[in-house]
Length: 242
Image (spheres, rainbow, N blue to C red):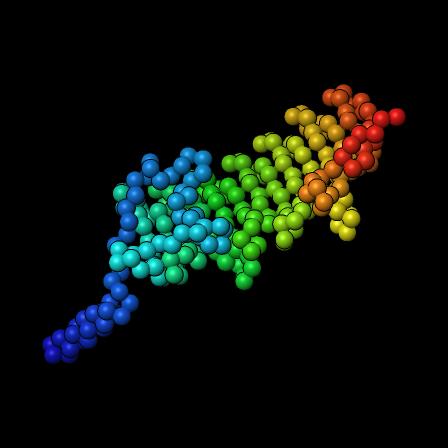
């Protein structure tokens, strides 16, 4: 009996010491689902606390100190809406959740320069996958709810120019394909499509650093829906007439 009492006393002292050193475990904030979950953009209220994706705000505790360590918030119904690790009030790692328990978004650091944010539909399917480099979205892919890619693009690490950009309809038909073909010269080839999936126009494009613009440059072909083509010549973004 004495041993049990001493063990209980030791555990109690340890818990008190832990609380005194690290502070009391914070009480979760409760949120009304209808007020914090946007039908289109999801749960965005924590993004202002994410320094890696452009956030500039700090989360403080009730005493006014910047939050440190793991924090968890809940819906009014009791399920978890947010679980994140904070350092000096900024989010380092976190997940948000729909009220049904499925992940709404997940953020993590990949390395010193890169971080990754994934967004999900309420049924658990991937909605967006974004890789940030030095705080800017370098690679971004959006998905339809059926899993088909809707839009994807990749930028250079300094965000100066595009490497590629592609978009598709929900049934998988291409809408636009824009790909770099000559990296050193910053030359691309672009294809545009009708809703039917038939080619609408195609031709070379070059990046103008001086104008910060992508200009048609070379022989372009435009097609009607029967497939008949007309040819045009472009130089530095201006059509050259014969």
